[in-house]
Image (cartoon, rainbow, N blue to C red; front, top):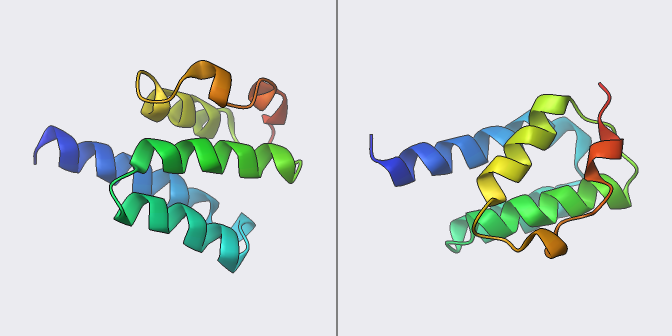
Length: 88
């Protein structure tokens, strides 16, 4: 498996882990970004969906979102209070 395939698999894994918490529209928005070659943008969008909907997610999800966006998405474009949404 290539590094890109591994990265995309991790991105899809984050989306799958949250699928039961997302509306069909939110799921489609994130999936479309992945399909159009913007997986880091998909992680940014997912982070904002979490914050905008006042969701709580496992710490591992927040860590994965930040890790998968790191170096590809400017930190100022990520929600500043994302860590406040750690829960279950």
